[in-house]
Image (cartoon, rainbow, N blue to C red; front, side):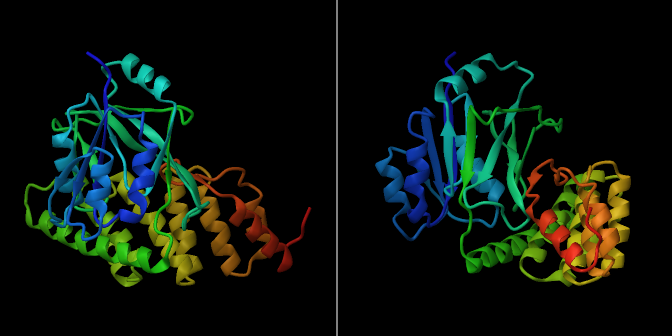
Length: 337
């Protein structure tokens, strides 16, 4: 059976960016499937110029549902999930050989996504995300921050893909107003999902923790820090859901830094370090808290231990803020070498 690839997109009012995305997919995929969820601009017309299989639908406040519509319309063996604000950099020949040679035990590939405009708001240069997977092996779940899940409940078997073979470049939301609008939308959808899950006595605790975490993240992005803290603390009532617990602890520490509560940040950093999941990242939280406390020498001492920085997902963080805090600590009286 030939190795075929379908690019699947969900879009709404993406006329400004869609052409660039679709142009980058030429020669890389065999099939283009686009689910439009209610565009009022020329998005659909642009897609049809690229001979895309366009499904005109409606927005139902559910990202997973929207993505699954596109998946169900695809016929290729492999699915590449792409957003309109992403472009593809690919060695098409090598990619097809990798997929043809992939063992049947591999369900999906994690693909590098880099920021086209430099580090994002969290200092991320690039991260890995599951974007390429066998058709029919999984479907999306979650109204917001949707994730792929196998129907049998087993973990998705993921292999990392060499960025030289395929990477995505993400342009994202360039204006603060657009980013704020996105965060408010995600918070609204998160509330709907959490409400539904809490009302269902059969809800999987892992899925509820993930939904509460996503809601906390959305509330944090929209500026509702009190609401975010409440949701994130709910996640921390289930320490057996370790990954979600650790992310909630991290986000609470970031809120503590914003709110100038350094003692709380130090406590949370210690708790996060105790999980063994975070490598040197808790030291970065500690150093920032010590800076807020005016403990310049101790802040510098901790900063000297940081040689690389990754978040809980293993995504590389920019070290420039570490260097900037070091310079500030020295300016405030820390003794340089």
